[in-house]
Amino acid sequence: MLSPLRFLVASMLLSSMLQAQSTLHYFKAPMEVRERRIECDVAAYGGTPAGIGAAIQAVRDGKSAVLLTFNGFVGGLSSGGLSSTDIGKKDSIGGMALEFYEKVGSLVGFRAMDAEKTFRAMLREAGVQVFERQHLKEVKMKGEHITEIHMLDGTVVAAKVFVDGTYEGDLMAAANISYQVGREPRSAYQESLAGQWQTVSWKGVYQFCDLPISPYRIPGDRSSGLLPEISAEPCGAPGDGDFRIQAYNFRMILSNKEGAIPFPKPAAYDRDRYALLGRFLNFDPQPKWVLNYTTQPMTDGPVQMRNGDSNNAGSFSSDYVGGSNLWPDGSYKAENHKELQPSRRGLPVPLPELYRKREAIYQDHVNYQQGLMYYLANDKDVPEELQQRVRMFGLDPNEFAQSGHWPHALYVREGRRMVSDYVMTQADCEFTRVARDSIGLASYPMDSHFCQRVAVEIDGKTTVRNEGGFGHHCAGAYPVAYRSIVPKKTECTNLLVPLCLSASHVAYGSIRMEPVFMILGQSAGAAAAMAIDNKQAVQEVDYPSLRKHLQKLGQKLDAIPAKK
Image 1 (tube, rainbow, N blue to C red):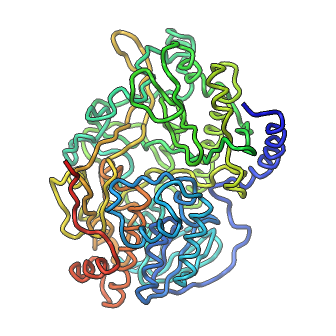
Image 2 (cartoon, helix red, strand yellow):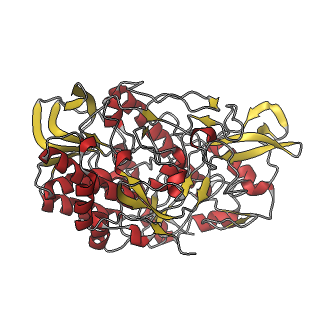
Image 3 (cartoon, rainbow, N blue to C red):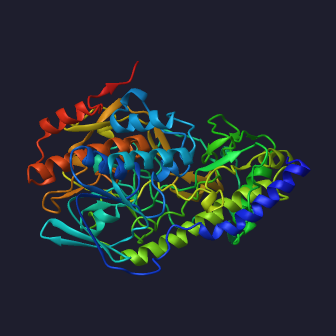
């Protein structure tokens, strides 16, 4: 519990924070439109580790390169709160990614502001021009070749090779490249983890301690309607695919030190949103609230509370389950399917409209997660002992000053996924198939956060279950194929996609880690330079030559089996 003096200081800081909340945005339309033309060899769109790695390596290989960021920051999630780096096997990290972590001083636990400073220093040292607040409007193509990309503020970028370094795959989609959104059915690639209600891992974890909690507003009364944050959509059968997206959240940076800022009450606070959590907290005296990860029976988060990067951890936690379905491309249908759906091409929603939709989704996530923390710290329905433990923490006053000490980056765990000539799948993660054109290694367990929260009937009682979460170890550090970051040649010949690469939902759950994105970004930058030198399509880059170059750069390319 905050001391009186600490509470007074914190309240003053909170007042300042609330004034700063107006700066907490995903998208703000440009104030003015001005004509500006930028010409370069390589243009990387997206200020993520993938975009940064591609731009820096292109310059190191003798090419001119620019980095275009969507907001006023660089580093993506690595500088946006995710400092508990999802590593997998440490010895799988090489090249520029290893260089970054050595410069920032640690693989895990670094400060977000130090990560951004390090990224900016590396960009300056390489001579990469950075253009901030650049929002893609449209892509101009001649046949299968991108000639220019146009921004909302009037900027036009002409390049020989483009790199999509966004978490959503916006440039890829605007270039009419094939992609998927959501989860493939189990039948698509014969993946045991695919589709809904998989049974391979995460059995009983974060499932409200298997308690028979009624999902209805009036317990046991179906006619009273479902509690908030429970989906009314019909879920599918085991193995069915769908268009649902795993949950997003903000990676809060917390502190229990003097000066920590109390969790703010959001402008659109609605305590009714947390009624299910309140019922869970008071349903049974047996669960232990560990305020951290747990897989033990009758234990639950319900959130992670610690100094530094604090993630989702619980049945009802900071993950906004069901809140991200519209984020990737602005379209969503509550359908379940047993067969792989045709790949999408193009933009269902024009990009300016999509950005406005995402801004509304972003603000909804802000209200949800800030409201959750305020609820846990202040609401009368929260058990006093738990409330006191939550109130020992607050937001770190040394981080994210420009956004009210709240992370500016929403953790977009998954957006679009390209479909190219090589789709990374569970088979790659488990070594039953090994790509022969490795450009880097991934090794984190196949991992997905929940995709839906639904009412189900168990033992004759209607209760609540989360669906879509899994965590399953890989066979070791496995190669990621060069073919998985290049589109089909019939679709585009001068685009590389190292972040929203060609992968199933299952395999992407392992690949989607910040070190891997920087590894693949660096390899994409090297490939872009080679394609320019040889005046060839990115699909025609000579892999043996690329492999030799990547090895000189310190990239790890050969599979590393897990120790038995």
